[in-house]
Length: 212
Image 1 (cartoon, helix red, strand yellow):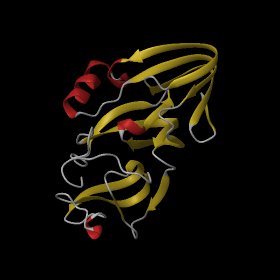
Image 2 (tube, rainbow, N blue to C red):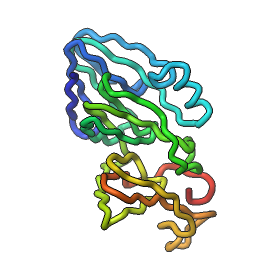
Image 3 (cartoon, rainbow, N blue to C red):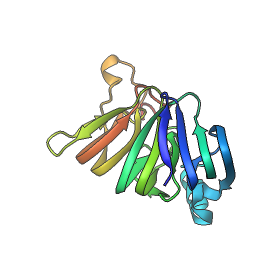
């Protein structure tokens, strides 16, 4: 299995000994050794995945990198966080997924949330299995714990990813901007309940449809 490590906070180094990883298309910045690169149709899911993404707007163009040596990945100087999966599933916005072990399964799942977020549909990218994944954020990501006693509400523009046994609900009427008098339309929050973690960034992606 490939070894993921950070070179600083904005470059991911992946050591491979004949292994393969899936990475965001165009994110390779350097490599040493022998590497082969191949674009993956529909994010690695074949025709079905490609059609699903076209219908939902959840765009994820990935490439397969395989070889011997070390490959370095980065994207727009984004901060990078490593996530370890142990047979579980990571839900992540497609624009925030940088790299995943080749053995991890990528897919698309219906969430019914964040429909107004620019470039994001009602679907979220999933990464499932055992191995490592690297996610990106605009600024250092914050990992927030959710327990049955302490649910969490998140601004949709700051949401990156989540994992664990969590339920999601879209709440309207109040958003963080409302208290500052900056609301520009119908206001929403994502509420998480259950047991797990949520990754948020200290910056908000551009959204449409008011504060969604």
